[in-house]
Image (cartoon, rainbow, N blue to C red; front, side, top):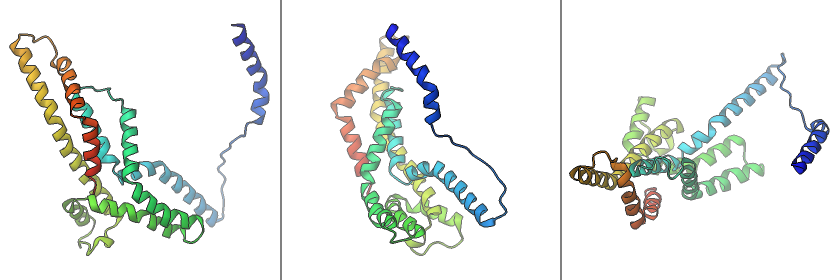
Amino acid sequence: MKRFALIAALLLTALPALAQTLPTVSLQFDSNPDPAKTVTTLQIVGLMTLLAVAPALVLMMTSFTRIVIVFHFLRQAMGAAQVPPAQLMIGLALILTFYIMSPALNEANTKALQPYMRGEIEQKAAWEEAAKPFKEFMMRQVREKDLALFAQMASDSAPANAGEITMAVLLPAYVVSELRIAFQIGFVIYLPFLIIDMVVSSVLLAMGMMMLPPVTVSLPFKILLFVMVDGWYLLVQSLVASFH
C-alpha cells in the first residue's frame, strides 16, 4: 500500500508540469470574404465526411461482405451465439479479405499510389487507376441480372460495354450479388445442423424428455461433426475458391 501511495503522490506532483507540455487543439469559426478560401474549407469538410464513410464503402467493394455473412450463418446454425466471438469472426473475415484482394491491392499500389507519391500523375488519375482493379474484381463476381437492373434504373439506355459501367451502378449490383451468394452458401451450411436438430428432437420426444432443451443436447454433436469433417478448412477453402 505504501508503494502505491508513493506512486500516486509522484503522479499528482508531476501532473501540473505534464499538463503544461501537452499540445492544445482549438477550433475556430470566422467569417471570410474570400470565396477561394471558403471553397477550400468546404472541400476539407467534404473530405472528412468521405473519410468517415470510406471504410464501409471499401469493405463493400471487396470480398468482406460474403465472408462475414457466411460466418454469421455458421455461428447461428451451430446454435452457439457467442462462440466464436464476433470480434474474432470479423478479424478472420478481414484477414481472408486481404488475402483474396491482395492482387488488386498490389496493382492499385503499383499503378496508382506509388506514381502519385512520386508526382508522376495527378490525384484524379490516381483515383481512377486505383479503382480499376477493384472494378475488375467486382465485374467478375457480379451477376448480369443485378447489373442490368441497376443500369436500367440509372438510365434508359444500357451500357455498350463494361467500360461504360459507372461505380454508382456497379457497387449496388455487386452488393446484391454478394448477398445472394452468401445466402445460398448459408443455406447449404444450415442443412446438416438442421438434420442433427431434428434427429435429437425426435429422440428426446420418443424418450419422453420433453423438458430438456434439444439445443443443449444437439450442440455437442454439431461441434463433433464440424471437427470431424475439418469444417474450418472446408469452409475457408470453399469461400476463397468461390471468388473468381
